[in-house]
Every structure is written in C-alpha cells, then in structure tokens.
Image (tube, rainbow, N blue to C red; front, side, top):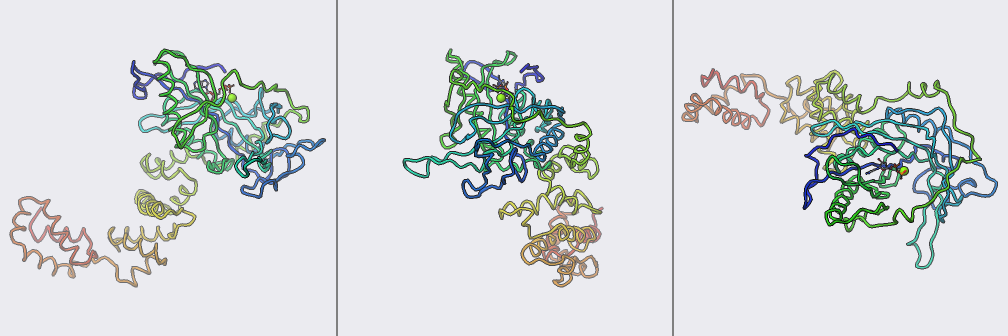
Length: 493
Ligand code: ADP
Ligand code: MG
C-alpha cells in the first residue's frame, strides 16, 4: 500500500509518554456481513440463530464436485456499499483462493478478492466535536465467512458449526488515517450507520455481523509510520476504543524503554482490559493466493452501477445537511436524529407542517429520553408520531402550556389516546381568559405588599409572582397572560 499522509499532527491528540509526546496511528479492517437471504456462492439461508449445521448446502460443506455460483444480490449489495462510501466501483474484479487449513474451513481455502477487489478507494467523513475528519477507504472486497468451531460444549471434544460457512462478507479496509481512539470509534459508528441506511449490513456487532480488526502503531509527531500491531476481531465499538488506548500505551512503554515493536497479531481481552499476542509476523501464513478457477472474473456494466446508484436512499451526511438547512436544527440535534433511519423518519413525520425545532426538542428530549429510560425503541414506542405531533399542536395553539404538555405526554405514554380529546375530557386546557385569572392575581398582590415594592425596583422578582399564580391555577394559566397581567397591575414597564 502506498501511504500518502493526509493529516498533519494535532497536539490535542498526542499521548504523553515519560519522554515526550507520541502520536497514535490507526487503520481498520471491518468485516461486515452482507444482508442477503442466501450465501455468497450457494442458496443456503443466512438466518441467524438456527440449529447448528441446519443452514448448510453441499457447496458450503465443500462436498467434492460442488461448484460455487455467485449470488447477484451480494454483488449488488457490495456495489451499493461502495457507492455509499463514495468509492470507485471496479467493473471487473476477480475472486481468489486464500489457502489455509482450519477445521471450520471445509474447502481448505476461503474465496476472497485479493488483487482486484470489487470496490476501490472511497471515504468516510467524521463529524468530530470541533473538526471534520475525512478518512480514506482503501478498498472493499467480497469474501466468504468460515464456519465456527465450538470448544466449550464438551470436555474432550470440539464441534464445528457450518451455518456461517459461505456467508457473504464485505471487508472494508481504511487507510491509516485515524489518530485517536475517539476517531476510531467515530469511524466505526459512522460506517455502521451508513451500512444500516443502505440496508447492506445490519451492523449487529453482538451477533458478529460486524467485526473490526484494529491496526495500531505509535510514532513521534512528524516521523514516519511505526511498526503496527493488528488487534483481531474486536466485537464492540467500546472495546475498540479500550483496545487502542491499551495498545498505544503498551507500545509507547516498550519504545521508551529502548525496545522495538514486533509486528504481530493480538487479541483484546475485554475482561482484563488488555491485548495479548496471538502470533508474530514470522508465524504469519503464506496464503498462496491464486484466482479461483471455478469462478469467472466478476464483470458488470456501468449502466448496472448507475441503476443501483439511482435507487440509493438518502445517506446520513446528506440527511444531516438537509435537517440543518431546511429545518434549522443544530448540527448536534441533526446528528442525534440521523443516527438511525427510523428516528430521522419519525422526526420528519412529527415535524411535517409544524415548528421543526419544537418537534426536534420533543422527539429528542422527551420521547428518546423516555424510551432510553425504559429500554424501549421507536419500534416499541407507546407514543406514535401522530400523537406527539398532536401534543405539539396543542402547545402551539396555546391550548396547553409546556408544563401541562409534559403531563399530557405522560398520560398518552401510559394510557394512549388522542391528545386533543384527552385535554378536552380532563379539563387540561390552559386558561387564557384574563377574567378568570385576574381574581387570583389580585389576591396574591394584596397579600404581598413588600414583594410588590421590591418587584418594582427589581423586575426579575416578577418570576416569583408568576410562579404563585401558576401554582394557584394548577399550572393551567397561560404564563404569558399571567406575566402581562402582573406587569400591568404591579406597574412594571
Ligand atoms: P496487510 O496487507 O498486511 O493486511 P495493509 O497494508 O492492507 O496490510 O493494511 C492493513 C490495515 O492496516 C489497513 O487498515 C491500514 O490502514 C492499516 N495500517 C497500515 N499501516 C499502518 C500503521 N503503520 N499503523 C497503523 N495502521 C496501519
Ligand atoms: Mg489486509
């Protein structure tokens, strides 16, 4: 790989060692399981959680004489993903055999793409708190997953489950453009969001549909790249961050001690919070790659790519930009809403024809806050977009105050129902009729002559009177009307 440095060292990201500053350099190889009903070269199902060896065709079990047949849907998914990563799509690519022996690999080789991948260079943009970081994507290639060895089912026997054998994976390789564990986490988060929008990978890291190999090296700022270690198969975004923090400090300690880094493959032990050596470069495999003679080169036309491009959904970056431009949301709120396509869609339903900022506020703070607290999702939310929109309409028309709206939200959450009908039936309407409020206002003014005098000197004390009136009206008085009335009666400009 030719490495062109796109980034200048940023002291904010340096790690302090005993003998000065260090910069960490990270590159990621992400394996993303392709969303597809069938495997890459067979018609067997990819459904998760089935009984061991129930989703296995003769091809997946590598029975003699069986030939692979490419699944077009997996190819389309890889192209869609490439388009989503703004990447070069290669109209011709080649499947190679990567040869190695392992019990969960019945063919004795993995079909992968080595020299000519289906997707070339692309990029992922990260919105970090005070800068935008553009991370280069080196390539994306298609390959088969292996089966799974089960060692802890029996004291003296190991088992092999081939359900995953032959499932299509996309390996997405980044350039070594990441400079902190936060950036690495943001990269994985963003990649996962893009894949989920595209519908090309479900991003379920706990089910293994997305796994990351994390390459880490350290160097003195301004120097060339150091020797890297590769931490294999990290299965959560949080662990990726922890593994990088540990690994960078481990390498710094060795270098500061006058030692050197061995290029090796390591494992992250989440229980101990440390990385451990698996194998060194000397033990690295020679995979004897060669083009798979059972498969023709993969070729398609530009028209085919254009057709897929024409049907791509709006992607998170574009959606975020639109939410900021069209709805006037803050980039932060827009980020929260576009993190999942369902939440962005939900927000747009609520915001349609309404005050978008108020809608964003209610969706994010009230609804998401409550869903998180109860461990629910939008799919299982007791409050629909129509109901939330109804509550907002009542606030906007001054039918209820913001405070009563929260009580109403609670009722809709627990009991359901139409917000407007509930307000009517339960007498929750805000009192804007000054006549009804006036008596209460007079009473409070009469009972507190000293405070009235103070408020004339210091108008901010008016808030105390507003509070009293609101309390007396059980929150139903219109705060603006109360405010105006009090000012007039007390004599404040
Ligand atoms: P290999 O062919 O051994 O897999 P690659 O050159 O394809 O190596 O790189 C694999 C991954 O390692 C890429 O994600 C790349 O960004 C990353 N990488 C390469 N060099 C370094 C380095 N010095 N420090 C950190 N990551 C690196
Ligand atoms: Mg590699």
